[in-house]
Amino acid sequence: MLESGLCNYVLISYGHSALSSDSMMQMLTDLSGDDAVFGHFGATGGYALAARRAMHTFGTGPETWKQIAMGQRQWADLNPQAVMHGKTMSSEDYDHSRWVVEPLRLLDNCLITDGGRAIVVTSLERARDLKQPPVVILGMGQHDQPAEIGQALTMDGPTGAKKAGEAALAMAGITLNDVDACQLYDCFTYTVEITLQDYGFFGPGEGKDWFQGGTIAPGGRMPVNTSGGQLSEAYFMGLTPLAEAAMQIMGRCGRRQLGPATGTREPRIVLCSDNGGILQSHSCIILGRS
Amino acid sequence: MTDYSKPLPKLNGDNRQFWEGCRAHELRFQQCTACGLVRWPPSFLCPRCHATESTCRIASGLGTVFTYTVYHTAFHPGFASELPYVVAVVALDEGPHVLTNIVGCRPEEVKCDQRVKVVWDEVTETITLPKFAPL
Image (cartoon, rainbow over all chains, first blue to last red):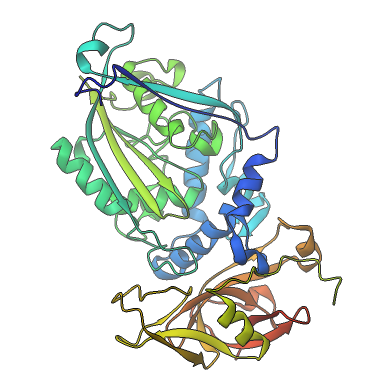
């Protein structure tokens, strides 16, 4: 649309009073259809089924997911806008967090938030005249495994992330070694694990070691969800990760800014994901400096 | 049984055969005449070979736990007194995967790949739910 001249600027926005109304929970429970007959509701139950299958097939579990929850919480503590800013999470906090739908604890779940987020897409030529430094789209990929959770055979991977990631990397002409940070759709901790695994950062079940020692946290070798993400900053669908990637590349992230200040690599190339349903659709987009 | 407080299935032209089968204590599925696939959920053509002809296949009621969860939260008031309860996906021996409950054991006894067998829960005069229990 931009290249053909149909429009000059595209605003991509999301806003929801999800916390102060019951509309988000209503939307999620309505998705259940006849699964509600068996007491199966919403997103947590679906992702819990997927996470349990992954525990069985490749041996993941709470030790891996705890590293994700705690790593992202450390980032949230550097982000004054984050809902969980100032609320540190210890290993014991995670272990004692209540079950929602086992094997997922409360701290494996994303937040429900009032608020919104937006980004503007335009041509590089126009972007160069704007106040902020331009961020360019280097590559994109999309792939879906659309079976409902009850019939899904890929809940323990490969999800759509595998082919979407391969397509995005190919379009960008880079490999995972070129990626400086990831901003991922993180509705649940397990979603982060299976997304990184399917992108190829580690093999099935190797996340248990890969996440150890603060890999994704401030100072880590592969920062993930540097705003705190949906787990610890705010839930604005795919715009939580996408906006953070753009802001990081622009250098607008204050204390959590990637680079020397947080002991991380300069954010030249940031890989982002979005995900729909219960691991049923996947988009990957790679952003970079112009 | 009129005081049943949980959600009930919404019957339609696609799923009526299944739920009427449950009332008669039979698991009735469509089986593709062309390729033999036994499918769930119901559909007007085969998701594997796209043929439209199908016959009714009554499943044995035997299967294995593909995956499961333990609910510790009641998202509907009707389930509050059931907590904790098990929701599972059962892979029937004939092929279809069905979402259901595992009953007849404690939640901590449920395991993936466990053998299970259908048990019938007659919740109203017209609706019977297929649940599964360890063999």
